[in-house]
Image (cartoon, rainbow, N blue to C red; front, top):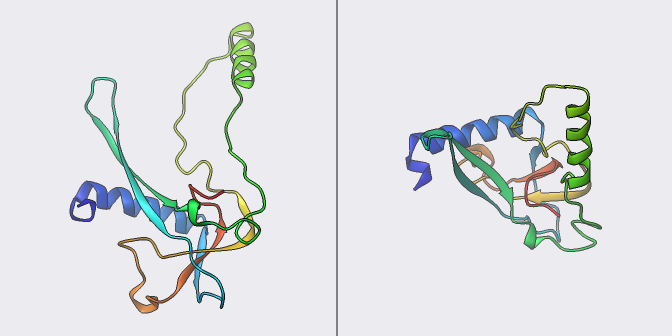
Length: 146
């Protein structure tokens, strides 16, 4: 359904462009004995405070539940800020009269370099027609990986 809607297609293209610009993967053949991890699109409509549509957001996520311990990953990590850190920064900002701004950073967590060789299927709707049987060898993390 999303592949037929111009808003979602534009959002998916923006995500693919960001992933390519970030050198997130290269197309390659799948080594013997390996299985690619699937990937899928997750869609979200971001709204303005008045309820009107701000933008359509498409995110490519790996189906991380298909990863095999010791083969695809050795430990897990969740890149989140601890509440105490937020409280300290806010306290400093109030004490020193620093201005505060809220930011929404696109692709903020997609810069993590991978230590393991991880392969995913090509993104749905964006399969390279000249290399249909190739997979994506990840160089950097995708959402959903462990």
